[in-house]
Image (cartoon, rainbow, N blue to C red):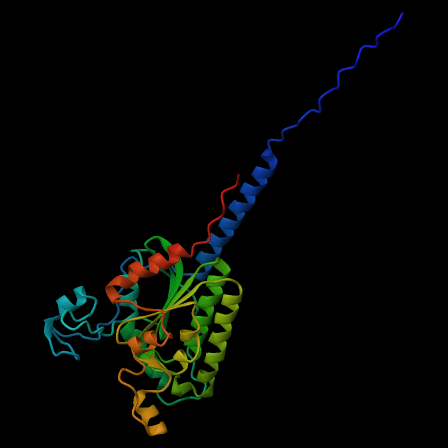
Length: 322
């Protein structure tokens, strides 16, 4: 008689589903700690937002305004409403750094970066300290550039604005340090940086130490770029000298206001040096855009929307997990 052996039923392997609760909790704690560290860093690196931020001195402090391009006479309140752009010919007139920031960022979002360099007069240049003190009182700025963290249509960025009202926005030791500090803060916070340039060049009262800021700011821009940062330069009238020969022309995206003079030496100096007549519109924003040195010319009333669009397009978003 044949005995049939009962086949043993194979046991199916047990599948253990781990909830991963502890891993999720650890991740949330690390994320919270990271956000707290960033918030702490921002608080330490910036000043409290000004409740009633000043607009800065008005370079056209008269009741009537006469456009230097077309001669049109307008009420100064009309020009302020038009952001100091002539409604007849489109001439973009100068505005202060503080007024530009006020027009650009979301209300109450701008926090000025702390970067107190103190009084600097390395050559003991006569009356230099007195002139700086007077300009600080008049402009509300401590130097030729105003830098901080702000939001443009909800998009956060480090923003630095050079002011031609402060010694023509000339770059000395203090300006070089503030621009470098802005790059370093942007790198630390993984934020894009936007710099509005307006400068007559190096600050002669500080001699060769002023020229050294070209190398310093260029190195900061390069380091920021190597670490994947987005740098946008907005060149306004005038952007010349050592600023145009350093960080102003090293951006990933270069915008310019219409009619802005952009170059190292002025047209008259170049003509006298080479003994030739320069092309029509040479060194103006339109000429530079045509020859590939400027990516786009943006009107002042469109600048805020354009920058917000660029910031949104370059956001680093995580891919959704499956």
